[in-house]
Image (cartoon, rainbow, N blue to C red):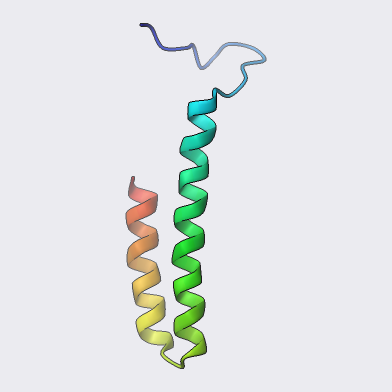
Length: 61
């Protein structure tokens, strides 16, 4: 099975590509929700550090 040419004009996204992007959106939303909870409880340093580490892991993937 050959991959699709990324230089193809008017190329649309496949459902798998859209699902992959959605997984990243949900992961970042979960990480930011955790940051919000940490900021509400008054622990901003730990919350920001945890968010930065999780976000870097998500971005690296």
